[in-house]
Amino acid sequence: MTLVIVVGTQWGDEGKGRIVDLLAAEAAVVARYNGGDNAGHTVTVGSQTFKLHLLPAGLIHPHTFGVLGNGMVVNPISLLKEMEMLRAFGIVVDPERLMISYAAHLITPGHKALDAAQERARGAGQIGTTGRGIGPAYTDKAARRGLRLLDMLDPVAFREKMRTHIREANVQLHAFYHAELLEIEAIAAEFEGYAEVLKPYIGDPGAKISEALAAGKVVLAEGAQGTLLDLDHGTYPFVTSSNPTAPGALTGLGLGMQAQAARVVGVTKSFQTRVGAGPFPTEVHDQAAERLRGSGANPWDEFGTTTGRPRRVGWLDGVLLRYAVRINGLTELVVTKLDVLSGLATIPICTAYRSQGRQLRDLPLGPSDLSPFEPIFDEELPGWQEDLTGARTWADLPVNARGYLGKIAEISGVKVSLVSVGPERDQIVKCED
Ligand code: IMP
Image (cartoon, rainbow, N blue to C red; front, side):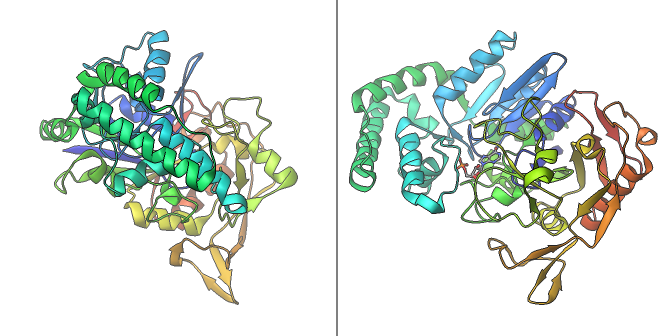
């Protein structure tokens, strides 16, 4: 049994795509278990950069089999576009290479229109969603009126369900949001076409993954978003509508407790970023922010992969990192983008919070309201001036860079196993204890 789960420890965009790419080299099955095309996973291989939103990033390795789990919400339009994009790179994602859970839910134009209308209606309280229809699709799932991939197998009943769904979306769009109405028949017909194409991909991946695990194969579960965007455990209500945390991999793939994860890999940026609204205690602004964000000239600068929005940036938050270790049961950390910190005289790192004169190492009531807390940067670690992008071994890292990684391990209580120093596949350093 070798289930490996990769999760983000922050608000997403930790660089999980490239770590998944690395771990997928050993995996037989690569599986997404939560979210939908709100995710953006970037993998750079030589001169090619792949931006994946819905398909597992590990599919870029030709030997892998991909899964979209029941915990996901799937927009067929995005899925088919992404398959087309990969085909242009010579990667054919046919039913021999991909299975979609019969129990995954569909995202429709109704969900997207409602997402946009609901965001507008929130006014100053906007979440800053990706506009992909994620919240409304999970709302329908929880309300037990959602459309599942399974429904696509019966064309007549599916057309009727689509009609009912768009009709209901129109009622809401009209009555609550005064928004434009959707064309019921056109959408129902369009989705009938998608059903025809997707039929051969629909199956029960839980059974397939259990078999692979029993045969001793490596199954890689790719979390999208991050711990602090988890619907239950994140900075609610500024969260997504799924469970990106590691236990979500079991429910989101149809696995039982016997599929104990051998490794739960937490990917953390060497600093902290966030897109969209919500609390961010260690956030910085102005010049310090521009320094961490980059100008946008490089694909790895801090601008959203899905929306292109500039990301909010700040220093690494040890309180939230410790929380992520506990909630996910992390066995190790992978630190990304360490190269970005080169050239700083000192590097602030938050080790605790202060609230009403008290110092706190941990959150008393989870991360939903972080406004009472002021981060304590009780140690400003010395920086390093060397360019790290050429580092490949532990010995190549300047002593202060090793000191920073040691501090992360100390604060989190978990070993740092790998560090990335650039977007290329080989720009990785294996850490020594
Ligand atoms: P939604 O998932 O589109 O509903 O957006 C809810 C919140 O999660 C917003 O703040 C988004 O910016 C954020 N979010 C969703 N997906 C990602 C992601 O893959 N990376 C970073 N932030 C995300």
